Length: 347
Picture 1: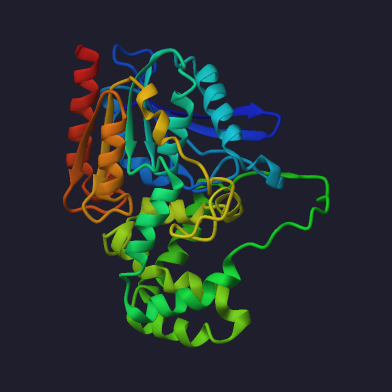
Picture 2: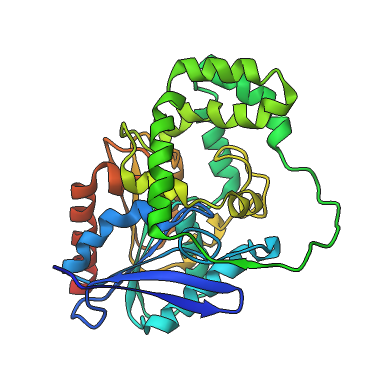
């Protein structure tokens, strides 16, 4: 059985929780997992820790979500914060040679980090990762517009309400740092959400959301419910959602998500709205494995363009998956990933 240890990286903005499965000083280079979101902890990536018997696997919750501290400071939620956090975590754990795996937003962060040309990165796995917000929104809007008519009608009606208005520029109060959630707290939240989620996935709930959306104060809630068929089709197709995915949702800090991204996967209004590194993909020359699902919001068009833009990349599509192939097809995903990592080190 793999050894496991947990700890915290301490920085002025707050503590970052991490977990190491396996031996960091083993013969094979460690794998560092960078979770999606933004603002959603790395619980869904738990199945990848099974690789800890072969090489160390490091999983962490980015600042502001999950078990890490939750600073009440909106100015922190920018890509530089998380790039610096990644760099400091490498230093804390002495990760001189390693592989990166970035899922979704975590893949975007990995790309941004690799463009700094850091030393010691042997390879990168980009799991359903955006590289151009404009392209991502074009593709996800296409998927969104193919949802059931009742959901589309509700989303159209509610989007003006959930789109953030310009800031007034007023100074906020002195920020506070709140401790993150415990594992037990996230599990308890997840159990409660698991009782409600099956109802939200039913057409009857979407019809009620349509009715509620005609009442302005209820439109934010109606928007969330009307987004459920998108989640069901293009994020995770397992029914019910596995406990690890539910714990990730339970530890989600939506302020981080809205500040950096926006109200939904198909509506980007945050600081990443203009983010685009497609023209610079060729600068990244480490071996890259791109993964996505057949039903993924990270569509084939996006993954094909990323593969063609990178200097040394291959793309594997998982036919029974949406956005979380390492959960939806866990065994095959680990097999493909382990083979890629071994091949890179064998060179």
